[in-house]
Length: 337
Image 1 (tube, rainbow, N blue to C red):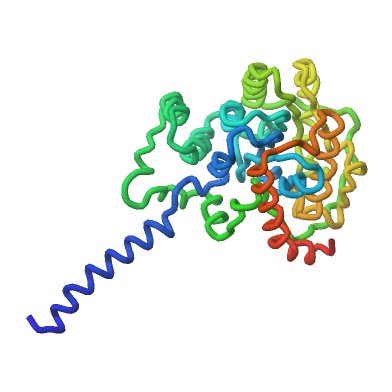
Image 2 (image 1 turned 180 degrees about the vertical axis):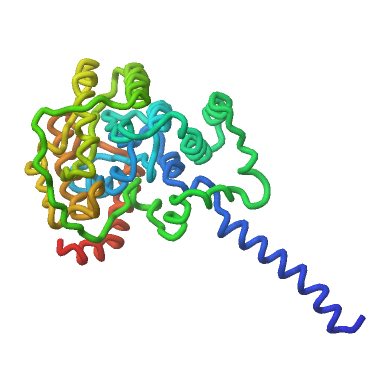
């Protein structure tokens, strides 16, 4: 064997080891990168307002802005999309790890999501949890194995989820507390809606609503608020609002607040020519207006705002706001804010 052959013989396995190491540590990342998992990195009992929902919440509420302007800590537990079964898990997990004063539950998913589709969403949430007894209990409850998250290439199943790619390319989780901004605007042409008209939820949605309300009933020290993030209604999306109108009396009969944000778009200040990313999602301009409106609402209704926090919590959220300002200037410039 020549000297050249010996060099090749040694070099190839070394290069292979280096490649495997780099792929394992920088490409196949831990599930804790997921937006669900980042919630668990927050200090215990440090968050006063938690929002749970789909991508509409992810794009519609800005926790760092709420902190800077209203003085309270908040976090959005959301995914694109999430599922009512995950909402059930998330409420219990919020109460296990935090002591919030207000939990907002966005229930738009009740209008279209089905029980048969819950498994992958549940796997995503549980897989994002840190190892603990609560995680083991949920794995047993749902019959989920975590074998795919052990050994080489831990977290490789994340490739099947949009959140993996979004969070791998965006350092957002270090500052956004669950928020993802949108920088373009779509002009929405609203329809003439039918005043007072409502439709029933699908059967799965009705069952999930009952289950969610039963879980909320366990936590008497928390104010629960239900709704659907604001949008302008068109022929393509009005049915969901009509469906949720039918559940408002049920929610209010349980002693909880339901807000039909569609009815107060003018109060929020949303403009159909500049504040929507698409028919369902607000852009950064719309999210800024909604964050200020909702923060003012919970300040007046529940006394949330200008809270006393430890220096560690203040430092955490002050740093989040500073990073937020550095990241979103380009969005504000693009939207003419």
